[in-house]
Image (cartoon, rainbow, N blue to C red; front, side):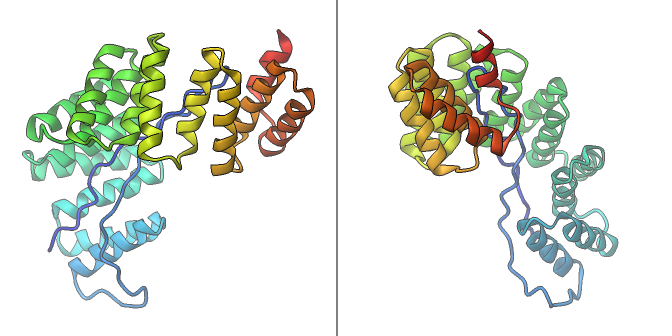
Length: 291
């Protein structure tokens, strides 16, 4: 069977919100897929494998799993199919089965970094950062030029509170891939946690220069401006986040709080109403109102 593996991609886009709970990291798989006609009936394991990739790329994990399982029934022990089925299980939140498939992939090809990298992602998503880091270490020993795995290990280290180590990993990911916008963003979050707002702002600026269309980057920079007392710039970034993600309750909530600080009661109330309509939980406003 020809390989068309869905390789490890970056875990998540972290959003740190002042006075709000940060979003948990999520795994994303970016498939390079063979596009097949949906009506075509596969004739062999390769056909089921490729159609499974097509289904997974379209977000239909159940059909992808059915096709990957049929491919493995016809061609047991195929490495790429095993990896991709693990990613499909992971996309459904079935981390036990995902890890089982990644375990099998590692037994099949113990010198291939992708088995360890993907199992590391699964461990990370279950909150087992020590096991995740151990797998990322193994993957990087086999492929020390993989920016994605440095990024993912940085995320796990950040979750553990190992801030200097997280910065080192994000920095290496950026060295290997200078246009890695999300690595700049997440390194900015670590600088924020280290109370270094100038460095945090510099990284958010870099992330936005590389990709100005990600609402989370603007939210994070808005938070940094707000923390530094520049409420006007914070409001500008929250407004851009709302333009990019019109259903972001968090962005409305944070802009409501910022407008409240400037004395714009009408604007704050309007944003609060929009946030509550999208999500009844409005932690930033609630905490501000309680003070």
